[in-house]
Length: 452
Image (cartoon, rainbow, N blue to C red):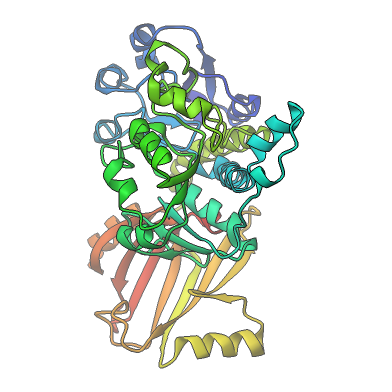
């Protein structure tokens, strides 16, 4: 199916470039920002794609009526408003855009933290009211502190990147393994709670993270700490946070999101949000509140839209390419080798060959034929690593591939040995095969932008 036959329904307003570029690519676009969910359900069978923000939930009932739907694109980072499992079972592709506003979220988190440390909100209000209280507004320095990040995906990594200019230790906790990078050390939740002076939340709202930061979680921290939440309000139990603020366990809180927000994030102040805990937050001098604006910059408004366009385009461009030519390997993704002392070897390459090395080796950046940024990784491993198994060779190659899932199906048909199951991470999909001489080969369908 060519793009000119693809009908897309937009139910939320977004940056104009989204529709403009989709139109240029040949897609048919229709807008409906006012109809009820039931009215949208009555006509959704006419569309192949839907673009949303958070106006209403895309649930099983909605999906059952969307008999021709090929994709759901959310112009935002999370997909909690969508029944993802059911949509996937119906072969509907899900698209989100965490890359589009991660920088804005990182800047907001840092700004809130510095404001809390230096009493900027309180001091500003006092000076405007004619008060000049220097001693009462003596602040703290970030230098020497330990910052703990829960959730180390796009947003957590962006915040850690912003902290590179400060002399801080950054720890991260995530349910995924091996997400650490040069900006943060991955630890257990227990270790993070033992060491952190600051906690910043960057988790999606899921059944596992709902009310995750409760009294037990807060009291498990060994030191009084500051809390920043630019993720989802329902991950923090407000009444428990208030008690921790009153006791001094939490020294201050920067909250861009609140437990009482509606699903659309567009409204807060109604009868449900008028309660004792919220009133405390409104009055507390060591609490900074903003209306879910982390990630809501003029720049991210454009980046989010552009990311969605690019991902929709990629879906149909992949189909068009597959109809014309079969792409398999598109380049070298990395070269990995064993050594007795990886750190010494990295230092040698850094000193004598100018490699810009980090904990993982060195990343080389280049551009493909379309001008897109692409990366190739050079990494050292200790001789006793099991990452190259079952190969006994001293090296392992990593190849960039166009469509890993399709390629694996073809390799199985061709009798190639596949090792383990395909793994998916925020930076791409991975699988491993063996060549006839038992050399292990890593195949990678990349998302290079995650590393920038």
